[in-house]
Length: 456
Image (cartoon, rainbow, N blue to C red; front, side, top):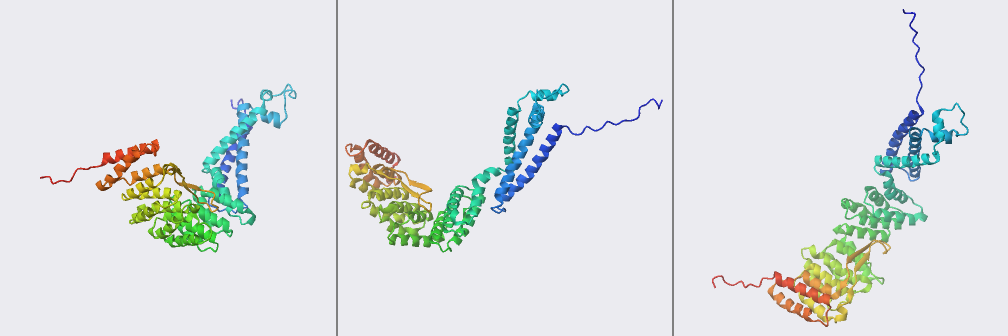
């Protein structure tokens, strides 16, 4: 009985199929790409890579993407298209070259069109791997495009690359990533004065971010630089983050500009507006007296208006009222805006006199916008502080802000508004309608009941 049993004859191992080999190679490559790609992204984000090495790492990152895409496309070709690309393109087989003993898979593969299917597979695999690896590395490629490349540019010291560095600073000024702020902080210590000055300006643009308080220390260090341009930009940026101890240096810079032969830097006046401190009122008054010259007067009026939140901020109202009637047109427009912001009821009188003192043609003229360019070259980073409006409408808007509430003031304002409403030849329809609306608002909210003795 035992002799009739055949001896054990194990079958030889067939090994891995091509599909399994491509799948295993793709899996191992994806794991390697994930580990290496994540490490590269961490090194670059942490700024631990030398500028000359960084392009090589980035090239390696893209090489890993390409390798993963090719292996995925080869695997897809085996699974979906029966290896048509491998058989026809890599092995060179065709329908004519096949003999009668060829396998059925080879025959089917040669009838497909790998010139279409493989590129399509490669594109789909490339897009998938790009999205997957970029997601796994927390959008490293997006980070590098918006931040990383500019951080690398700022590390350079070649004097001929100043324009590139300034372009990098402008890009990082619009970027709120922590890496961009760290790069700008380092750039304030750059040996090139232009780069350091622009970096100090760019830090000021981050004044509204949660880490604005951490910018004071590097900007204070920039004040010790020898270059006046760097010190000026550092002072302005400290004003933007409302570091009030800088007000003495800011006031001195503006005073020196007003005494000089060149036009004053409007950004210094604007910076005092940011600081909102009464210590700057005197030099702002001097700036206001410059009138429309270089836009200093209108900017000074805007800066004075920013004192509204100070305890004695309304002490600036008489300064504005005394100058309204004699001020040039643009400065007078800005004074109207400032009085409306400060909101002192007593300003109704000077506002009405200012309106009556001008002929209808002048009142119908448009007050230009108050704008400023804050970049060091005075051509970029435009800020519009006050929108344009006609002088008449701006006066009525100011009257609405400093609305008459006391019986004594209403007794003066209401008849004047009635005159504006009924004065058809001199005032436009829009002016008369605005005056009518203001008059109605004052009368609706007033309370003229006499506080008489209840017993009487």
